[in-house]
Each structure stands twice: as structure tokens, then as C-alpha cells.
Image 1: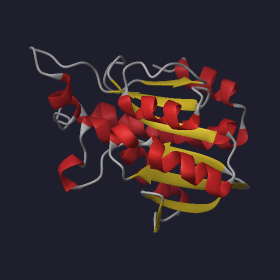
Image 2: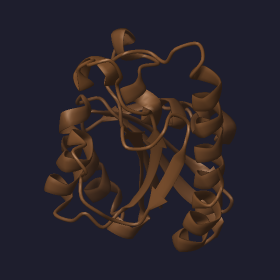
Image 3: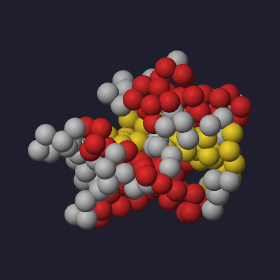
Image 4: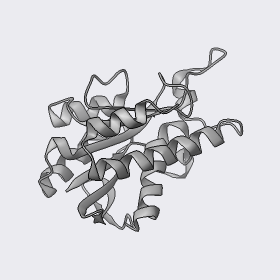
Length: 188
């Protein structure tokens, strides 16, 4: 089984915010793969299905971003998913808005959701789909920025990035992740 986890915050007030691009991507995968997120357990909303001959788990932790590991670790244990089958989708301040970047491992880079995952999983070695949200301008606080919604001008770039992330997730079902990473990281 391959687990795709989108990081974000639950609740209407956080829908379509920069910090929720992981949730948005999981929602798109859910539609495209016809895997409803109709199960709740371990502080998460999730669904399972088969895509390209692979059993897939789609997950949206409902613990709030900073506690994402509290959902993901128990789900991985419950479904006996090895770390190399975990794919995490999340926002990244260090990438320009609309850019995606895939990585096989690394530090949390200041992202509290990733920090929680590393802490609960005991390892930073899991595949990542980073979606650029850019940095705040004009002295805006980071917390206000990530919890804010995309501007009208940013929306086409984010829609394209989410679509590219969906395509990368699909590719990760049938190709080695390093190959997928090389294919998608060179796209601009």
C-alpha cells in the first residue's frame, strides 16, 4: 500500500488557504482516482482504493498542521505501511508560488507539519511533494501569510501546481520516485 498524505488544517476557516495545498491535492486525487475520503480514525480523514494496480491510502490529518504525525504514524502502523511507501504533500515557503519540488528526504526546513512527522516516524526519510506558496511581502507575518488565501493572481499558478502534483503522484505509482523526481523537478 502507498500512502499519500496531504498536510493542512481542518475546518471551513482554513479551506483554500496557502497552508492547505496538501489537503487540496488530496481532494483532487480523491476525485480523480474515485477514492472517497469516507473513513475517520486516528484523528484523520482517509480513504483506500486501487490505482494502477496499487493499493492506495489517501489521508488528510485532522490534528491541525503542527500535530500531523499524531495521525500519520498510527495509520501507517495500522496498515503496516513502510516508510518508503509514504508520500507527503505540503506547502513550502521557500519555493515560488506555483512551483513544485519533489524530494526523497531532508530536514523539516522550518515546516512544523514535517517536523511532527519526523518526530513521530523517527526518520526524515520519506518522499515529499512540496508546493511553493512563496514568501510574505511587505512585513506580513508568516503565520498570517500561510493561513491566508491565495490572491486572484496566484490562483492559476496554484491550480497548475496542484495539477502537476496530482500527475507526479500518479507517476509515483508506477515509476521509481527518483525518476519521478527527476522528471518533475526539471519542469518549470
